[in-house]
Length: 150
Image (cartoon, rainbow, N blue to C red; front, side, top):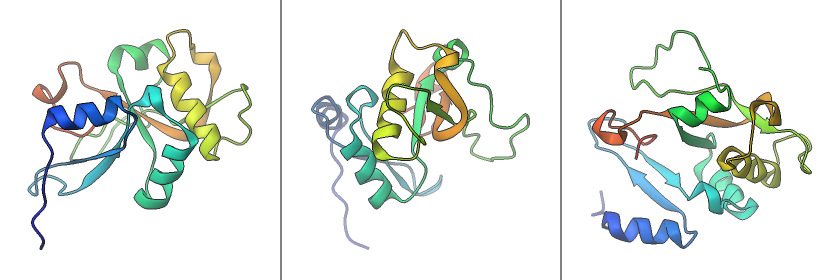
């Protein structure tokens, strides 16, 4: 395996502030994977498209527990059997605001931006949808060592 050069946390934060996508990796004894990350409030259809093409997985949006409660985002399942305890909520799509089926990069970007909007309310979202909110533990990685909290 090649040596991998990792950036500092300060460098990663600066890249996020500048609208760049970063990869957050975990320990090889956990999931031994990397996730694409970008600042949700700077989400664009181009970022969604890049993540979809190159990540080939779900597009998730970590949110504080309080925001999940405010938006009525309930757990995807009543009893999770996920050993990593990833706290998926029911998936959502934004209703209206030019969103059609919810699957396009534009629709998904609009949904993520709406999830971040302080004015959004539960009725602004259709369930299920194409964006997967994740309930981040208050206290961050000190409470749960997961990508959601990072």
